[in-house]
Structures are given as C-alpha cells and as structure tokens.
Amino acid sequence: MSSINRKWIFLLVCLSLLILLPPVSQTLDESYLISSMTRVLIFAMAAISLDLIVGYGGMVSFGHAAFVGLGAYTAAILSFHINDGSPLFTMPFAYDGTNQLWAVLLVAIGVAALVATLTGMISLRTHRIHFIMITLAFAQMLYYLFISLDYYGGEDGLPMMGRNQIPLIDSGDDTSFYYFCLLVLILFIILARRLVGSHFGRVLQGCKYNEKRMQTLGFNTYRYRLTAYVIAAMGAAVAGVLLANKTEYVDPGLFSWHLSGELLVMVILGGMGSIYGAVIGAIVYLLLEQIFSAYTEHWMILLGPVLILVVIYARHGIYGYLQKLNQNA
Amino acid sequence: MLLFFEQLLNGLQFGFMLFLLSAGLTLVFGVMNLINLAHGSFYMVGAYVAATVMLASGSFVLALLVALLVAAACGLLVEVIVLRHLYRRDHLDQVLATFGLILFFNEATRMIWGRQPLFMQLPEFLSSTVEVIPDVPYPLYRLVIIGVGLAVALGLYLLINHTRLGMRIRAGASDRSMIAALGVNIRWLYSLVFALGALLAGFAGVMAAPIFAVESGMGESILILTFVVIVIGGIGSIKGALLGALLVGLVDTLGRAFLPDLLQWLFTTSSANSIAASLASMSIYILMAAILAFKPRGLFPV
Image (cartoon, rainbow over all chains, first blue to last red; front, side, top):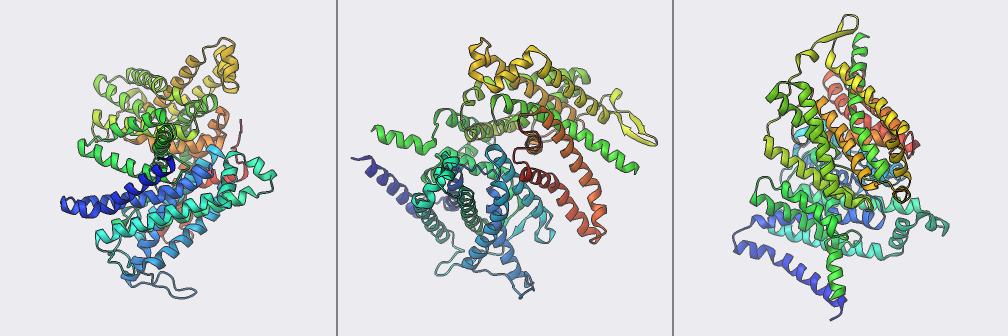
C-alpha cells in the first residue's frame, strides 16, 4: 500500500471517529464528552490559524490568543447589546448588536483584520525573538484594555444570554453545535491546505527559509507576511466567536499569554507546518490535560515533563513522527 | 513634589529588582542563545525557600544563603537534565520545553507548600525607615534592594569584562566551537553561566519575598516584565538590561502613581481611575512597542 493511501485512510478513520463521537458518548451516558470535544475542535481551529504563520511563515507569534479573545468578545458584546436593548453605537447610524452568527462572524473577522493590520505593520518590522516579544506586548495591551472595560464586566468577564442563532441548526443543542464546529473545522483544514499550496503559500514559505532571496526575486516579502498575519488573525477570531458560543461566557483571560503559550504548544506538539499537525496537537494536548486531571489534581506535574520529552525526542511533533513511520513502513 | 521623589525611589527599587532577573536571562540568551521561559521559576524557588527558612530559623542571612544555593542548584539540574539538549535547537523547541518546566515548577511548589500564599517577615535590622528626603521616612529595605542591584551590576561588569572567566564567557558567546577547540570545557562553562543566572533570579526572589506575596505562579507575571526589559535593552546586553530595567521600573511605578491624577483633568473620578489603571498596566508594553518600532533590535543591539 502506498504511503499516500495510508495517509488518507488515517484521516478518514479520524473523521469517522469524530462523526461517531456524539451517538457513542450518548449510549455510554458520558455526554460531557461532546462538550469537551467541541472545545477541542475550536482550539484546533485556533491552532491551525497559528500554524499558518508559525509553521509556514516562520513568524512565531506569542500573542495569538489576542485574536481569539477579540472574536469571543465581539460575540459577547454584540449579544449583550441585543439583550440589553441599549445601542452599541449611535453614530453614524444606530446599531443594536446582533444575535445572528453569520453577522457576528463578519464583524469579528473585520475587527481582527483591522487590529492585525495595525499591530502587524509594527510587529513585522522586527524578527525572531523580538517578534515573539512584540506580539506578546500587543496581546498584553488588549488584555489590560478589556480588564478596564467595566461596562462589559471588566475582570469578571461577560456572560452571554444563550448562543448565537445559526440558520437551520438548533445552536442551543450541544450535539448540533458539535457537528457545526466539526464542519467549520473541516472547512478550516481545506481552506488552509489550499492556501499553503497556492502561489501565495509558496512565497510565504520562501520567506520563512530565505527572505533575502525572495526579495531578490522581486517579491515584496513584507506584504506577503503581513497578509498571512492578518489571515491568521481572522481565523483565530472565528475560533474565538465559536468559543464564546460554546462556553456562553467570555473573560479577559482569553487574551492571556498563557493561552497564547498553549496554542503554540499545540502547534509544536502536533508538528508545525502541516495543518493536520495543529489539529492533532490540539486534540492530544487537551486530552492529556483531561486524562491527567482525572488522575490527580496536580496534573501539571505530569504534563510538564511530557512536553519536555516530546521536544527532546520527537523533533517534528506527533505528525512528523507519524509521517516517519509511514515512510519507513 | 515629595511624593514624586518617593515614587521615583520606588521605581528605582522595582527597576533594580527587575535587573537582577533580567541580567541572568539576557546572559543566558546572549551566551547560549537560549530562550528560557522558566527563568521566573528560579525566582519563585528563591522566594519560597527564603520564606520557609526564615520562618523556621528566624535568620535572614541564613534564609538568603540557603535560597541562593537552592536556586543555583535548581538551575544547574535543569541545565544538565533538560536544556543542555536544546542549545542547537530552534527557539520554538526551547519555548515549548521551558513552558513544560514552568508547569512542572508551579505544580511542584503547589504540592510542597500548598495553595495559600506565604508571607515573609523582614528581619528587625532591615525593617526601620530612613529619611533620605527630609521628613519622608522611607523603608530601609527598599534602599537595600537598590544598593544590592547596584552592587550586582558592578560585580557583573567586573566579572564579564575583567576576569579570565568573563573572557571565556564572551568568547563562548561569539564562537562556541572555536573556544571548545582551544581546550575550554564549554559544557561546564554553559552550566556555570546558567547556574549564575538562576542564582541571580533566586536573589531577586529573596528580595521580593518580603514585599510581594509568595505564591505559585509568581514567576510568570514578573517574567513577562523581564522579557520586556531585555527586549527593550537589546538581548544579550547587560548594559541594556540595566537601562531597560530602570526604564520599565520607573515607567510602571510612576504610571501607577500619577496617571489617575493626571486623567482626572479629562474624565470623571471613577472612569479616570479605571482608565488610568489599565493605561498604567499597558504603559510598559506601549513603551516596548514604541522602542521596537524605531529600533527593532532594542536600545543596545549586540
């Protein structure tokens, strides 16, 4: 059997497992599984968006959670105003907020794109560790900004009165919402794979390996990297909107550097620069967290060393390890 | 005006404490090219050990010595067991592994000392006040921190620039294989530099223990500030770390102290307070973004 076939079989098995999860967990009477897997799917989207810039663009952002937070707060604030009855703004026209998911997604993507363009224009002047730190700085600024927004709950966060409405789907039902998230995740994977395989994606990867050469070839590398940065931010915002809908609650912790760190861990753990790796990383990281926390309250004492072992012994993440197995077989 | 000078001293004191942390971090980055997110863990270990020994023995000097020893030993262990394998790796791998170390250390302190924060009493000979500025009693302990920071800065300068060991460290930073070929045991040199960084971080932890609550995770909030410091100063530069630490310490402290009053000219009292609090927290990040926007490699690029 060729290795290509084996890869597709592996993906199909994973997909069918994910599709079968809700009925199975309901028969086993463990329906909390659906809720926690929904969270995994949403984090997988955020990890994919981060992999676009880290794995393909060589831009290690330590502030990616900021865009997840922006998306989540967009959903919560728009829904807050529609329930509250107060207008979000009155100039140049009165706007009351919305509860329709599609509208929320559009606004969230717009907000993230705007913020990413502004911060990216400054951040991308720097490289390597300085880029890591400046993205962290911008995320911290947003973190403190949202803590100070007393009107929207400040440090305590903002609860959402029910999920956004999705056409044709009962979003309040956990199983339907799970399938919706699965669908969005599959769309994410397809779009991301198309993107990295496109002309744009090739140039981006060229910038990662040798930016000077790409410049000599006549590419405006700054513009390509900025575009990638904005696209990744938009993806993270979509994940943020869904995350807010999943938990029906947002708080400034969504912007924290801890979440940015976890997203990076997912991407590296799964194997960066492959999109599938980001998904695997999100699944494995969050599952490990759950499994260890079932054993002991002090689960981090186990998770920490596991991460270290993965770095030292599995250099290209789990997906890289699987690929090696596949080629050797 | 008196209040201003008092806050200025507070800012300097915070700055020097940040310097103790940043010096080690920037040294490790400059010499080994290693990003160590777990640097704050040594700070935490120092604080915990000092608070415990102080409680048990009542001697501050003993607490300080034991804490320094334990922090340096932790640093040495971490270097030999984990980080030694990562010098030639990508920065990303280092971020991931040291993130794992943070999780480990935080949980370990929680298991040993519990979730309740510890508090450390000042010894009597340090708990008096001095009138540096006439009529404003200022805690002696905070002045001691400033003094310690100055002494460490001077000591590091002498060590790096005027000793044989310092020469080897500088040589190791610029060409690892060359200095190894010349017969210097580069592995031990790296371990030594790392332990020195951990020791300085532990020192900062001891100094911080009587001022802040000693709790699990205390390393991270200050670690981020430390990274801001070394990025502003230029990574690998001790001089930059000193300047960056003082800049961050002053901007942060003065911002917290005076922004509420300044903003009251513009807004009502309650909204001025909340805006000022967030602006003050943001101020150092704004400072860093501004500096990087104009000098992408920091103030003193190495």
